[in-house]
Image (tube, rainbow over all chains, first blue to last red; front, side, top):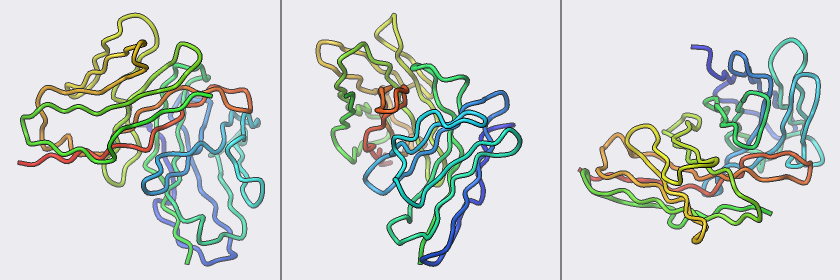
Length: 115
Length: 116
């Protein structure tokens, strides 16, 4: 079953360290989305990518956060110099070339804890 | 800008009772609407979606939702709740972002609790 794969499932980092979250999209999907989930707040859009191209990063914090989706390999969400407020569940989703009515297929998420 | 409001962060029903989860949206254009379900420690799964055509949409696990343009609503229902329906439910609408893409925007979620 080639669903959306995220790793690691759980990640613990100390303040100031870097966090790297990985996402392999569903087979045949070329578009990847990253969302952040905080308790009682639902999912917040962060960034939308296709291979070698960031399509929309309007939800990304301006500093410390970056994302990429290289020609080969998984999509990476990178958080530099993590702070306690970065603790959250980060979900990746993929779809066919995006149209407004394309449903998203989600991974099981990476739960980041910053100590 | 489009947005989604889910009324009630928690809904509690007895097993066998009707499930009604409310969702209202704001959109200046015909919307694309979705319901997703999230089980503990998992990602979201699509339950159903509305794009065009029939306003009553049937999804998986016996759920359905009705698009009512006059009420700007897309409430999710199921005639008879099962214990296995206990989960978090999210309504979403495709939203045009400041970056120029249509991205699903999610409501805050409703936690469905099913009592035996």
